[in-house]
Length: 286
Ligand SMILES: Nc1ncnc2c1ncn2[C@@H]1O[C@H](COP(=O)(O)OP(=O)(O)OP(=O)(O)O)[C@@H](O)[C@H]1O
Ligand SMILES: CC(C)(CO)[C@@H](O)C(=O)[O-]
Ligand code: BAL
Image (cartoon, rainbow, N blue to C red):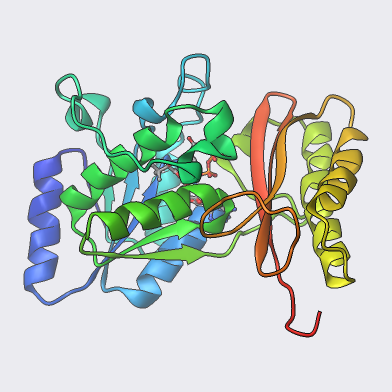
């Protein structure tokens, strides 16, 4: 496995793989890798011949006051995880390498896709994500890029960017990997104390309850959200940012669950703002 800090090195190595007939898989990350990231690397290895992982804590997707400085950085451990998952190349650029001059060109997806859900409390966040992903896609030129469904809004926004701008790659969205308690794996779980980590299991429990209610016939989104809100509010100190039922493709709010929908939430538990979601399926008969 190679590790490179410079864009030029990545271009040379990926060109070599491409000219020898290999398909290129790409897993963009911000590091502090866990089993969720490993599952993306494994998916990439199973579908493509040469797998590139990027590790870059992208400053332009953080707002002032967010956790940019404190974001966990665990490069040695990350390198070992990439190697054992089967990656071929890790790209670890510096901020200077990615943003050598003041950035004047941005890629932005407009509308509810970026304004609803996390867009409300993280203005500018998705513009930072789409811009860095556009840059990374231009550097790596992958055939397939792999993203996790935990960040479902990010995946929906990036799909729209790729479609709107005819970017020559496919996106594959992979399942959420969870801890035993059901808590979605996340680099930010490192901020949680043992007690907070136990408390945070309520997020998935509330999503499962929501899905069970839909399975047994509840269609009213307000009732679903109220039930989840009550469960989460029982945890001392949990601060709800949002709990919403949305269309999984457009991310527009849904009042009545008549076709497939997504329950999504963001909740602060102690110092960590955590997100999670679940698909709600309505059978033709139901
Ligand atoms: N539990 C998970 N299961 C599957 N994919 C995941 C999981 N957690 C993160 N990913 C995916 O890994 C990729 C890189 O995400 P990132 O490095 O931000 O990790 P993260 O754990 O989501 O971190 P954060 O705590 O900052 O949200 C994204 O596509 C993200 O959706
Ligand atoms: C896609 C991404 C690597 C862009 O910085 C980041 O938002 C993430 O880790 O999900
Ligand atoms: N996992 C998405 C990156 C972020 O929260 O900034």
